[in-house]
Image 1 (cartoon, rainbow, N blue to C red):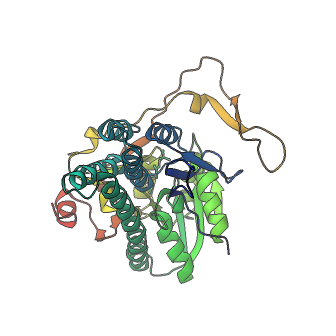
Image 2: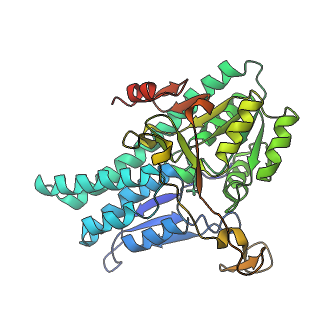
Image 3: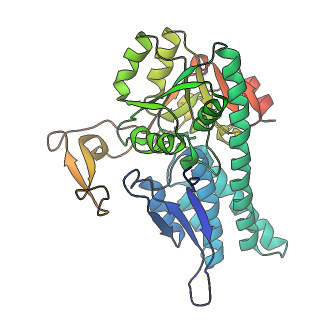
Length: 365
Ligand SMILES: CSC[C@@H](O)[C@@H](O)C(=O)COP(=O)(O)O
């Protein structure tokens, strides 16, 4: 069996003269062709890794942000300045700012208590990391039970979008952790994997994780999903979230909202799996969620690994797929209203229907 994926780890210097600690990432821009690590020795390097999507996915961004603060503290850098940079690196996934602020608060509290702010920030990051792994396991249990209730015939054919597995988490992930649980239970017939244009997180990352885990999967272009529904080959849609507003609106990878509309039309359950750290009581509704707009080049060009053969030479070469100067609309996320969500699966349990009151009760606010 393939080794577990470790998307991020904290590395201490191995001996004298070895420099300081670092955050080591599995570089997701290079998957699935190359499995290479990216070492971030300071907060600005981590900010670049976040912006280029070398590290990505809501829960993992929270973990990365917390370790980034711990790294700045360990180096003796200005922790508040690093925290601002990190928290603002990407705007939509609320977990990023959440992780940063938690480690920043621990740093200040640790300093005041005399125990050492840097140690406190690192302990907080480690705690968040471990909590996320435990949360993944809980979401998998709750999600599997929910599937059993919704689809009593078993033999699930699940459609997913973007990437929600070990590459976004300290554990098995969110929606993909439920898929793995279904596979282990013997009830998963097929995972349909949207390629997820423009950056192909489905094709590059979810297919990679599914192949490693022996999950039976089939890849499709995003715009082929409608024909799958029409031919009754989808039993449920299952995917993650980057931010859930207080009213239950779900921001997730662009292309999620059309799937929710399709699912409603075809009377197929639409399931969102996310930790409660993704629920943001400070964002009242979907219209208040800031949706990241990314460079048009991600739409007008493909990045092709540079070199023939099974392993790339590292660099990616942009390959134009549109006329020079073409304008592109490239929101990274879209927002699905709560009335289209059949259920939200969290580590604390399932919310269905998804309402502001139910979320407030679940999150204890
Ligand atoms: C559990 S991950 C849920 C979301 O973070 C995921 O679906 C997603 O939209 C990630 O977007 P990305 O732009 O790749 O960071």
